[in-house]
Length: 218
Length: 214
Image: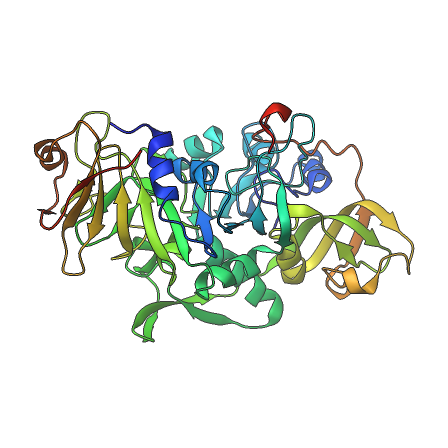
């Protein structure tokens, strides 16, 4: 089973030289730690920064420079600052190519739920709905099952949606799966030491298995 | 309207004044609702807020409690839509279409149309009786310059308040700010003052050791 860090490291392999990328809160934020230095990638922070740098050195953090997760950060050389409307103009306008989001549920047709559990938890959607509806390629980092063992890759989302038919690829502790245009989770990779049967057990939505399935490279 | 993202760039002095005045039944528009013990969270604790319009409220347990118990009215709006509704409010655009939120429960009572093969929702502009914004530097004409990511919603809200009250860390005489570097032209700002005793709290202090530096 992949750790959160290993899921983040696998997602980092999706990022290509020259990409403008928005990383969501949680596992997606960790992806930044695994982007190879050999490629040039610009990370967007939706609160108004293009060019997120590493965390500040001890003692150098300031309150006026944070990421969307409210963590103190630094700026890369060539960074740019802007307001929230401009930030989402970049997203809505299709200038951000890749969005990595967290999810509570994803359905087999690519619907995403990640902002509310009615009666229990309301965090709000933040920028997730804007990203889900934007031209950016939306990929998701999530746990395959909840703590009770129930699948979060479902036929139909039971939780309120953040966006419809928006998720293109999912990275979990067990597998990497693509969303097929006609519906269904297409299994692409399995975590080392796990079987196809385990992925089947953990996936409530329609699982499609054809073509080459490789082990998730770690 | 209250500027800021998380606790970054919030009008600390303006919030303190609202607390001191004890004004109740406020309708607050702000991206977040502060934390349990700072920012708008302080107003929530004193039950001064009737309705909160925000995009993300995950850092505030008291907020979540008041919301789930029905004590507090809440309207959650996608962050980009919130920003654009405020921008539109300040720019005299009464409404616009956007794809964000289409196909979700937010679309249920909204007008919509299909543009470029996408369902788009009609969103109304947002304005406010008062906008409380925080800038780094300002001059006596109300021109403002923000610092780092403390800019966020502040310049948008400055345009959308019937009365915009700006608080700044440094208030300088006319002519000292470079006109090339003004973020908010003074035309949007009705009141300005130098704030005091800024705490500028950090929500999540994340650092790395020098030994790990590249």
